[in-house]
Image (cartoon, rainbow, N blue to C red; front, side, top):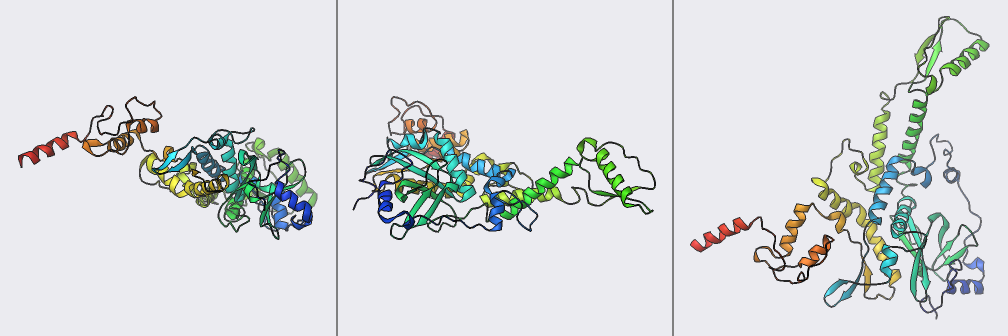
Length: 437
């Protein structure tokens, strides 16, 4: 039976899988196509059109409205930008272990996966889709049996579904043109938490919905508060009784002359026994600032980002001491859970026959320490004090983005120019004491 490895590909990227389309032509479109009619709840419609949820009085949360919250934007930008900046080298398995390999896929993964975007923009889009929608998608553009490009797909335009006898399929609705379906071998699917074989749960619509709703409501309240000149609601009261036309005249005149920020500092002249009485507390008294600060911490917790890394330093502490500990902790506990899923999906789709090649993100740039710590580690790796070295000078220089030396591949402890050893004096004293004994 033919499969995607030995069937020629249609050069038109909108045509979909040749095997899948031929099967659909034989069995009819209704056998694999999901139901055309889509039923929406009131809450889903509110989120779709970005209006307040029915009966809630607070803004509905969608992926687009969530990005209007500064904490969500900062978390997504931090994680997406960090992963997009990481090198993704190609390795090969050899008898001596793993070695860096020269492969055509390196250019796709690190420079330009698609003619319309760079690799950094591609990976940032994928990670952003994962963080907001729960799933990231990209189509493998094939040329023969190989891959010639990666085309990102917006999660809203991809619908995974199960067919009767073909398993999981992906229906894609492009911006222009007819819908088409793809087999799993032609789609890079990067899931997150709650993956059930089809889709993952959206962090925005599940864990972060309450926190983002409150943050958006607090933003709207703050905007209205300061648009009114940072002045609370109030009432004009009098001891006497007023007629309805008098009430309307006083209200309209007051709003016309003193409403809005542009008129907030105009002096008010009251007569006829009118007095001003505040009806609400000030922003500080209602703990608006504290509420906004807590929502930042809550959103950062959901994305796994330390609050201080998105500019929220109040009542927070950092790991260890210094940038080195913070970078290592961020890579281990936040980035690594996304990196592993991306690596595994790439390896099983780019090399389905389990070839000797594989990819793995290089996080050394984010985990590297300060210059003094790096130099001390390099000395040990080069064989300090006669110890057996496990790195060469050129390997060290490669990590520091320096040109190789002519004799820098020698593995002896004295290869190259040895740097002064901070512990040399202590070693000499210990050797002298041993000789005397």
